[in-house]
Amino acid sequence: MDQLAALLASMVVEGVTVALLLARSGRGKLARGIGVAALSTLATHPFAWWSIGAGELVVGYWVAVVAVEVLVCLAEATAYRIVVPLEWPAALGVSVAANAISTLAGLLYYVVAL
Image (cartoon, rainbow, N blue to C red; front, side):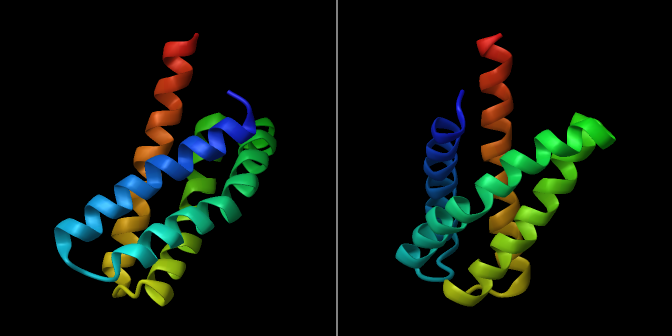
């Protein structure tokens, strides 16, 4: 999968995840949450794509994935906290869930594609 396809897939997966979580919890504003999911993924995905590739050479693939995803989750949680708005625990939970599902979907794609 090339970077553009991975970005679009991440935006869809994270947007759907955030929409489901916010609709179920009744917290925050749904449209804002979907917007944050799309825009924050658009902003962080290039960083993650490049950083995992570069970090893999230094610390190994899995350490690079975990380290980069932690930074991405923190950045995106900040956006959920400010824009949606959600309290910090909820913002972090939404960010971690969306990014975990997106990352797992990407990993599953690579396992199936091999």
